[in-house]
Amino acid sequence: MSDFVFQAGITGFVENRKRYNEHLLKVFAKYDKDSSGSIDLEEFVLTIRDFLCEMIIPMNDSQIMLIESIARNISEELIAEMDADASGDISFSEFRTAIQTVYKKMVGEE
Image (cartoon, rainbow, N blue to C red):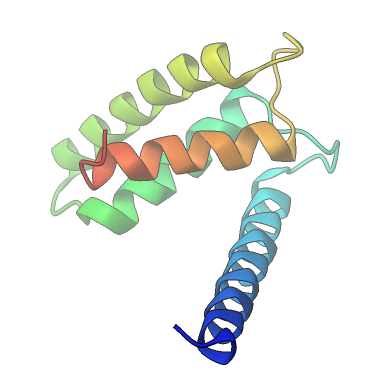
């Protein structure tokens, strides 16, 4: 592989990673309702609920209720796992890790 192709691949990877991070920062800010710089459990439940609704697209009220229940369970579990400083909230770094974990589980990578 030529240096040019390798460099172009690395540049593309870095740019995609940068755009992904910027997107996550916007999502984080959207759900950080009180602008505290962290997301509490209720804010995180909304985040996960909306993420699941985008992936699953509920068709009726019972499916919406099920997604809300699943979102709460996932959120509680992830905050317990990802809340490295035991603050009860998650920082952006913890949020990024949690979203990656949810995505991997949804697409079956784990």
